[in-house]
Structure formats: C-alpha cells, structure tokens
Length: 320
Ligand SMILES: [Zn+2]
Image 1 (cartoon, rainbow, N blue to C red):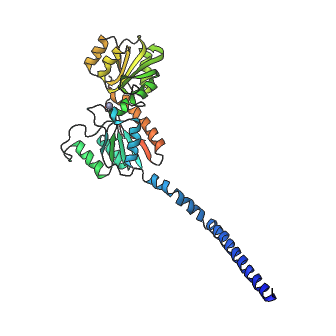
Image 2 (image 1 turned 120 degrees about the vertical axis):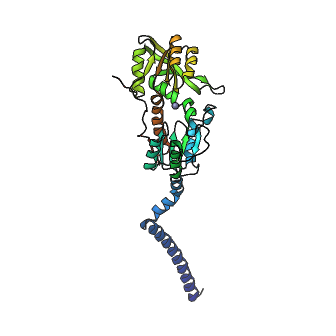
C-alpha cells in the first residue's frame, strides 16, 4: 500500500467519524434546546391536550349520564315527567344549580349566576302544556331559561326511590337500620317506593320528633299520636305520600314519616294507632337536593355546583 492510499483512507475515516460526532452533537443540542426553550412543557401540554379538551367540553349529556346512574329513570312513577325537560344534551356545562322546585325566583338566580344546567327535583312542564308564551308565570320563566340557554333536568320520583335516593337518605338521617323499600321492585328488591326499618334503640315519639326535626333542619313538624308512645319501627316516604300509610300499617310500623298529608289521612293514622309525622314537603326533600351538590361536585370538579340560595319553604307558622 502506497503512502498516498494510506493517507486517503485515513482522511475518509476521519470524515466518517466526524460526521457521526456532528450528528450526535446535533441530536444532543436539539434535546437541550427543547428543554431550554420550555419545549418540554409544551410537549407535556400537547400530551395532556385530550384531557383538557374533555374538561372544557363537559356537556349536559355527561351530567345526565351521572344522574341516571344512581337515579335510573326506570324507577320513576308512571305518571311522572322525569329527565331532560328543557335544553340541549350537547350544550356545554360549567355551572350547575340544584333546587327542589323551579320558581321564577330560582330561575332568576340561575340567570344571574350564569348557570348552564338546573337540576330541579320537581319537574317543570308537568301538565300537558299547549303553549309557552309570556302570558303566564311558567311561560315567562321557561322563555327566560331558553333565552339564557339554561337546561333543566328533573329526576323526581326516580330520585325518591333510588338506592341512595331521598327516602334512603332520610332513613340514614333518622338513624333507621335494616332499611328496605316499602314497595320493592319485582326485579330488584333494593329499590322502590318508600323505605322502612327499625331504630337501634327504641325511643318515645317525643324524642323521635326532636330527632327528625333536627335531621331535616325543620322549624316545626306536625304529628299525630301519643308523645309517650314507643317508636321502634318506622316507615318513611318523602313529599306528599300518605298513600304509603297503609303500607306502613302492613309492615308493622308504629310510626310513619312523610312530608305532607290531608286531614283525613291523619284521622286514618289515628284510627290505625299509627304515629304519623309530617315534616313539611320542603323539609322532607330539600336536604337531599343539598347533598346532591356534594356528589355532583365530586364527580365534576371542573364545574361550579351549588344549591339555590334563594329557594325557601313557601309555608310558615304563625302563633299568637
Ligand atoms: Zn316533592
């Protein structure tokens, strides 16, 4: 091999090695540049982009899916009107308000607070509505909600009867154990209308009245029965549910708790020697609407969730 050939091969080898080094140095420099330029943060942002998009795009449909997972519409009474009653499923949601009943006051609060979705326990459009105009209170309220793109969802009797629904929550607040539905569904005995169970330690009606009043934050409750009688087995049905009175008797309850009842239902309870406690319709259901806020907040942490503060019991007591 001549000296010229050896020199040529050496130069070629040097060029190849140098090129590889430049490539390696270039690669390292580009990595450093990405770090130095905040590129890594942008890369992380890009990887998380999908999650961010999902959070921003929370829709009415997402909230409905959650609500119907614990209060399935199949649990609603036949005569009821539950579900999404106003608005679009694909509307985005950043603020949710719960209430017991949608009244003009509550609707105005929703508008002023920038709410996107109202979860109202009692349904709107309950009766066969033929027109929605500004000639009625309800019409004006519905138009106001529509114009402000506020959707309304009502779970009503499906929420009453659900496994963790209004009646079950009342039983828990009253310290009732071994809780079962008074009217269980045929295919699932854990859900259904009303609830009943027993107290761990029996108390007098006088003591139990104090317990339930505090439990639902009621200013007053009505009752019929002997204040010194024993309360051990209790039936519960929220709202206007004196229809369950006969079921409380059938299930050997000594006490039946509901929201409101007519005079003749009280006479019937007295005739059956059944204590009956009327919490007030509002007091029997409003606490569950407040606890729904906690569930919604936990599930949709990206949304603002609150219970209407303007809503109040329309009834009051006057004493001389
Ligand atoms: Zn009700």
